[in-house]
Length: 547
Image 1 (cartoon, rainbow, N blue to C red):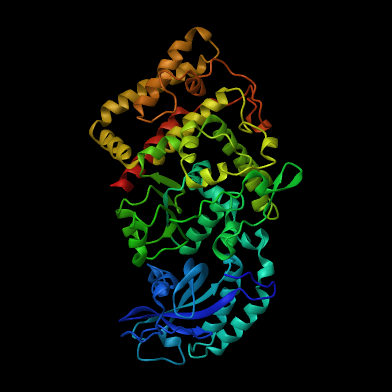
Image 2: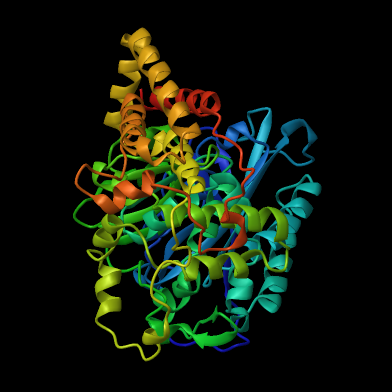
């Protein structure tokens, strides 16, 4: 596709999609009209779509749309030529749908047999300005519905002309692309698990975001992706001009060119599907192992959860990551440095987040996060994006500080975070472990209860004797017994001294990290009852979901 003039519009079409009681979702209006030689009229009453766009109506009015008054979806379809053949480009769809009671309409037709009529107004664009276009579309559909006459499409034609004048190629920078995405809301939803999600997106696995409303699922997915430096901006050159864009990112106090560090990573390449919303009709696309190497997609239909083609499912409403590939469980676990980082982000976002600094400040913290756990690094080195990055030569890479920004001596505060993380994040275990744990708790409740009580007593004794070096062996054994009683996989192994020290420091030391992690003499004791109750509740809920 040729390069575009700054003043040339990015907007391609505006459409109306309705729901027919007999034929389902179908396109009722398109402006400008489609000029495709191969359009075939089918038995439905709607406007026929070219073959690459056959799923477009179902993307505009998604699964479960009848349960809500209004919602919005984001999706992608291939760009096409005059013969309806896909080109190398991609069109970005933004759809807003809502309903109105049939009795309130001034002009009705015979197809309106239900008490409510649902319509969607969709805009196809050549650039991924999702939230910016949605803000315009909300005004357009409200005006269209207020007429109570869907034959008055002149409103939509005027809206299209207005959009072509206000949205152009010169708006292609991260200020507009990331406008409306909320890193703060995403962190509040996932808390410490956002770092695990960040790792998951880098590993080029099959990741399904599940939840409703659709708008929230799509927005959460895009917000999480925006934490990877330059990835959302990469959609433009990758899919439109196939050239790497010059993207700026902040490092300390200076402005540096991201390509000097080999960024952005090309996680979207041949065989990778990125679809903010995918309909039930497109499930076969995600299941095609020959054509699809990995995907990042959003869905609302529960049928997607009953198939095992996804390596991990991200439950947006609950802020939970369900790992279905056992090899990912250890890779997504957080190191002590990771836990310090998430605690720092939590305190920073709670106390200092401003609307102006929403994405840039939080993304900067993710951009400097370079030291992950050993399993994660090994899996990341196996991805295509890593090999492409590794093959390059980057002049400024030697200037990057080596090591985790939150690396430091281990303290009792780290032990607290480690226990809390492992007890509360049982959802990160694979399905088989969760099922076994649920069955064990159901069948041997009394035995497990006794083991937990014994473990609680030993951990409590160890905690209050934490400064007594003579009890170091008992402390280690009691902690291991406690964790084994909970059947929680831990990163430390019998023969790994370094990993064992993450869980069992001999004595408190000062942390070489930001102030939030300096241990205070008046630090509160661990409330074992709270930890146990949280762990049991979370485990049961997670297991019930798996069943």
